[in-house]
Image (cartoon, rainbow, N blue to C red; front, side, top):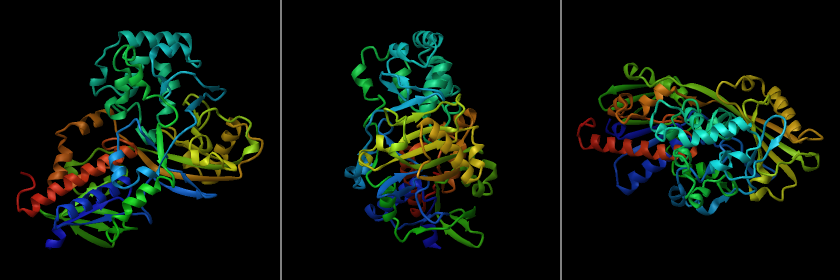
Length: 476
């Protein structure tokens, strides 16, 4: 029984779960703690949405694709893992906009497609004159404190600051749901706080041009690893050797006593633990948390499925190669594709490749009908779009579809306000019982958030277990 009380069970072997396991393992070793831990993953491999494939000797990421150096700095963590020298930085300019008819490449500094300096709004070729005037006037006269109100979404903030047309045409295409969540449902400080720094005050760029230029889209702003993002999850998984259990689907979680939790696995087996760290997607974790404490249930999320199609293309067949890394496509177009990236134009290791390697992403909130179709139909539809966008004279040599079902959970603005409250009773009540809940979308999205949240969950679980070991009330 004492062994069970000293066990921490981590549910989920994605980046969050592996980070939590690494931090717990480190704390146990460095502090000589009498605890043990296990990682329970319901698939046959770890990594979550990080999935690297090998094509012609090139490492290609078909799920999550890169870190953005303009987001939270995680360089210290990567250095600790010995991965700093494994980085490769993007090159080749930035993504350009394809509106469904023509390519629009505005020659000006931008941040996620938006003019970095608002005086440049007059250079935006795809905007109407009315939209340019509205954006310029809004930037001068609207409330400076709009971003402080959690009742306003990022969409609201940018519309008030820059106007509807700028949001729909310039900003939204550059913010994929699987990395940032939904503009319409996320408060700006959780979505991308850099937007507050850049656009939160009128004329903020007037005397700060050099400081703000570090946010500009273009070469060097994204990085991956020479052997793909799986380099990171493989390195983390090395520290879980002997602690990782694959093909272990959690069916239910319940309390056996005040200090013992029971985890039902695969409908046949069970495991006891003193503490549980949950890192799976909310859509998945709600299934087994529902019976744990129905009176303090987490809000249910509405999830979006996303997909990636990989193409290997004969270079001679391409008649319309983008100047930058590829294209983003706004909602208003008739295309299903949301982003088309030519890896040869983005990563230095692909520069001398004999073929073009292209990744097409699609699927956003309220637009996932296509993903529900059979694989061959999806590939055929996206292939025809790529042929039109790149003006291909022949079919791609290779086409493969990767499906990520219910990968992006969404909460309403009201739910999000409650969840962000420091005294959020749901999280507090679960923590009192030794259950620490995270997962994609709970506190944010993207790989940087996954690492930060994994660290936090590990820290909270270790503190709880220390109190239990000292025979103190963990609720004190």
